[in-house]
Amino acid sequence: MQDDDVRRRVFWLLKRLSSYSLWKRKRDAWELFTHSYEAAVKNWSKSQPEQMDPDTLPGIYEVLSLYNRGLPELAKGHRFVWRAREPFALALDKAGTISRYFYTDSDYWERGMQLAPYPPLVEALHKLMRASEFLGEYAPTEVPDAPHMTARCPSAGSLLNPDAYKFLFYELPYPVFPAELPDVPTGTDLIVRSGQRVPKDGIWEPVRVEREKAFGIVPLGVKKTENNGCFNYLVAEGKAPYIDEWSEAQARAKRVGIYWRLLWEDVRYKDDVLPDESEYFLERKIDSEASVQEEPAGEIEVRTGDVCPVTGTWEAKDFENHRIEASKGKVMPDVLASAPGSGERRVHWVTWRLVRRA
Image 1 (cartoon, rainbow, N blue to C red):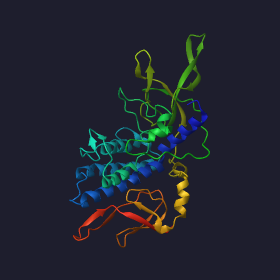
Image 2: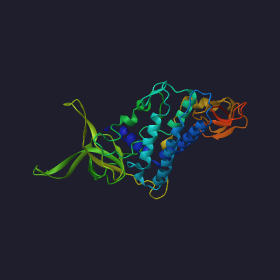
Image 3: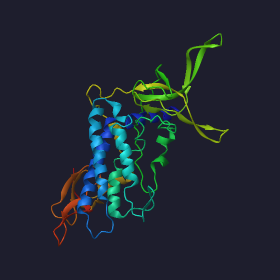
Image 4: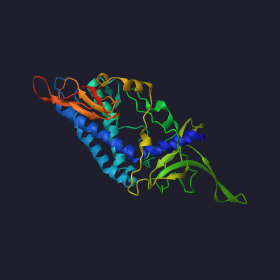
């Protein structure tokens, strides 16, 4: 955290993770997953050995309801939604439980852990669920005042290390940073200690504090502050968190109190204006993108659950009159259609063919 580029990146990421646009994307992706899961439960063929648990559906809808409650509040600049037992904090906790128990077949899962790649139809739903997830999404949520709880972002690497985005059976997209990152503010005189109430929403920096002394004995006031760790987003009215510090004597990390200095107060959206936040979702330029653009429209195909590579009109192969308008970056949907022979309407995972570019 002494490197200027690292400081700029962490600061930008914390603003991104606490932005309205990111949480709206989370909500919209979860809605798509919700409707797809419900369709799968209702229409999954009985002949398929893999079945999705219908008892999970109420919990999935509860998460969507929590997002729907919290998002209008954030749009008004009300950040209490990240407090413990408030909509966004509850949504993350409940979504985490759904994720851990997503598919509990013993060949693929044990004690809250995925053991093997899911079957294709299950994995298509799994991708839709993961589309709502961002690494560090817990960053703006209140740290509960519990003995074992410490700051959400313990180090810069927890947000910047590309390996942190890679998991055993899936990977979250690494953020694309703007070419020019804004300067990190110099900081304010507002300082609190771990366990004290946080007076303002915003990004706070852990600091060491030296005090002036009268004749070297009586502390008078703050003389100097210097960085003492990774920035964190702290929500107002919550208690300033503790951090883990390595103890050589005990050969383990211990929870210690520190000082936090306000770097940047978050007053976004309080004027009922949603600013342009497109910089938080820049697209990574890759060599394969150019080749995709050069391919004839009819030769570009993707499967249900894949990310749409080109904005345009797409047609489901083997299903007449099933066309959609899909935007680049969106997850390709399934198709609800009658099954051959029986006429029963079922969910089908399909191959989509690009018919016309936008």
